[in-house]
Length: 345
Image (cartoon, rainbow, N blue to C red; front, side, top):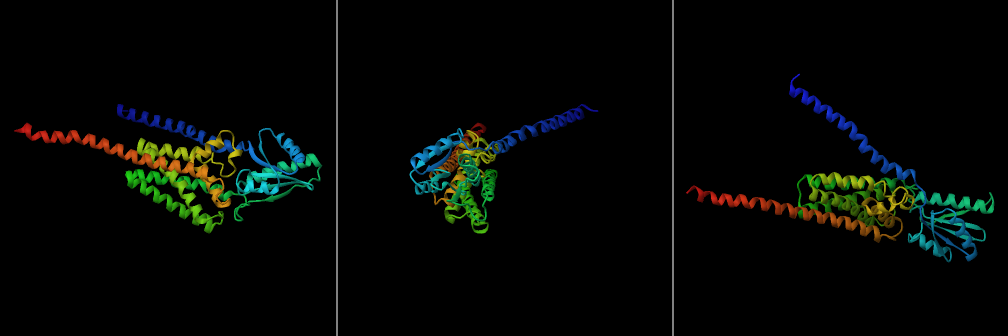
């Protein structure tokens, strides 16, 4: 066997070993990011209201405090105030102490998982306090869409948006669009995705129930935040920025979003990190505009706006830097070309 053939065979062997080693190295963090938070779902400082007579409320607070670190208790004067807090997304639910026993107010639109968890916890607490016959009346103050009672379709809607944003940022980069053209293409793509997604999720599937245009804007802004981040990183770092931006959004952005559960059910600090990334902020914004008349929408809207603005700014900056570099490289060549006739005379 010739030396070249031997070298080629060794190169192929090294490539095979690299692939075999690289696959589990990539699979391990992906499995961790998606499976670990889902396997550790539990209430962590979950905002929960308590309303009713002062003595009974104090006792209920003491009972709920037994779940150490699970609930962040907010006290309200009466049931009406507790309902307002739920509708304003201040708390996920509330326990109202009445003469007939505890009444649980939930909001499955905020998270069906949390609503079920609260019902189970309060029922168990009432059973320990009042015997096996204790009953807890549950009222869903802000219910999920009738076509999506478990929130499965809502939770599944964020990954396609993230992928659409990654694809838009990658296509703009690979087509060689720069500066204002690239920014305009990203804005147009985000708007189109928002309209199409609202048409599918609201008009066809019926899993969103709020103002149609507000939902389209939330969906479009989420897509723009992702696509801007991907294209912006690519403009500054080259094509490697596409991979970096895509990995950041899909992993950990998607599993840390809490879209299928709730940020306060994820391990610390995963829930907080997820709300700083476009998928988590997009899920919170979409919940607010679709089910809560825009309550608590400002925070996630600002987060997405910052992502979009920074991404588009990076696209424009990267284009300007590249243009300056190209102009700098062309000046010596022009000067040399101008000197050539003088050297020949």
